[in-house]
Length: 206
Figure 1 (spheres, rainbow, N blue to C red):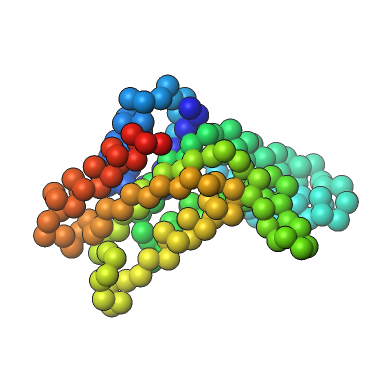
Figure 2 (figure 1 turned 180 degrees about the horizontal axis):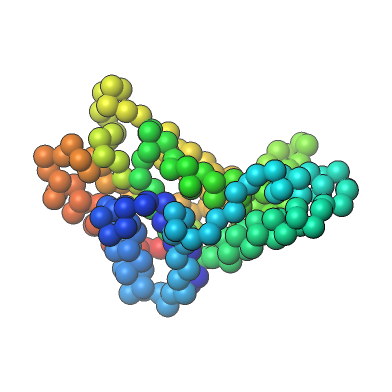
């Protein structure tokens, strides 16, 4: 099984989402022979989808010739996509930032989510995901927000966004692990133990 682990936390060993992702991968390795590609989004190279990449993309749409600079930038974009598309299973650890997705993960999503690569479009049928036979496990954590908490303590736009994006590109099997809150939590140990059991149970059936 080829696993792409996307780490979107900058906290290193102190990251609760990363700890759970690593536990999940260890449990998954008990069942499958794994080939793991670890992509630390804050540390590894991730091209910006700026003027050069946009110019290259538009040249494809318009049938014009991209400049050499644009072609080089587009090649970097394609390299990231191919790394993404090569995996059978995605393990994504995501801390909740300002009610949403960490900016570096959003950058990755915008880089790999390209027409003709990860999705297609039909005027009558709409969008179709092109990444077939993929699975994903997404580990969500947050410091204060938790399900059912009053609105004054935050919101979660991250979980539905990631779930919708994975479906959009064609991923059909999506599992989620939630550990929250990690800061304002009088039963921290029990809550973390529950998340760890989730990780173990999902790995056993994935």
